[in-house]
Image 1: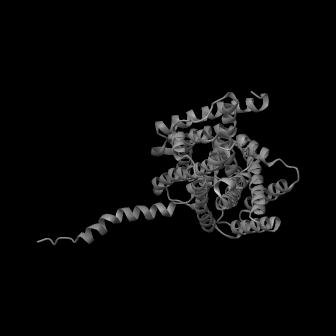
Image 2 (image 1 turned 90 degrees about the horizontal axis):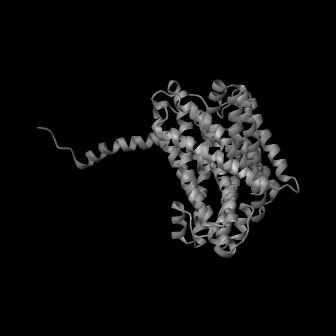
Image 3 (image 1 turned 90 degrees about the vertical axis):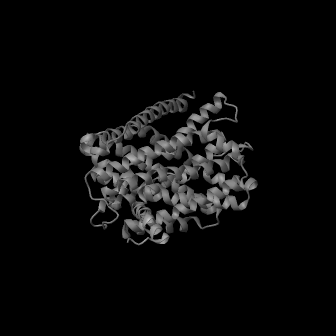
Length: 429
């Protein structure tokens, strides 16, 4: 006669598949979340702050579409790498030639140097706000970053990045202390309303909206997620868990972006206070949200700048190694990947020098770099879609209909918006 299992035994065995799934998920967790969170770098915080202060709650409508597009495209990049065991840049060089590789890498390098310059500028400005010695503080940050990346390994870098991501909670507190109109904020996610949509407002919406797109979905992000996942050496059999993480990461990045925009919309837009940077936002919201909110906002910019410095510089180095067939990995030493680490150092040096030059308009650099990102995106998407649509290359993991046509539609829309943005900038349309 069979013995009856106790409720405890049943619960234990019933829960094991769930526990096993969670353990596998957290074993692959990292690349997609870090990539998405690093999109909220110091330049991103500046862009979201300006968007909220200039346009108010209606700009939140763009976040819904951008979040879906971010999740879908990053999932494609992750899937491509885990199936082929190759990075995106490596496959572009092999399938489309060196000339294409040089063009894409050139655009990536210029845009990334602009982004890194903004990150260093954020460190300079916010360290003053927080009463930290500017030059010693920046020097310490750069030395520590180089030591972590050159003397450390992949696991250490990933751990530091994930811990840093936790500090984005500061933006939630800042937004709550700003006492926003939550019903207006949430409803604007689904349809834009609550302002007078004049031609001037719509022009600003287009220009700043392209900046929001360019800072959230970036060419460097597409290359970084592919290379970072490859460097983690995730097994192909765990692909479904990595796919899940890409959507978690996409949600998290725009979840925090939502609160950045709300904090400035509820204070600066409502009181018609103009803004040109994220650091200004940290100062300007203090009279309305309090000193704690201001300090947390400034502290968040420092963490965002740190995330951006690591991810953006690594994306350039990874892409360079793959585009030109060189060795490049955080788990290799300096002698094995000399050009990889040397390029990281050169980027830091050039960006830091530019950021410290007197009279440099860093806001213009941010807008230009983000515009280059937005304009280059359709080209990067073209190659990403072509590769993930290739049944011979992807097998059963080829794109489904939604992934294919949604990203094609998104690429076309981005291209049209990019052309319109350039026309608005140069012809004052």
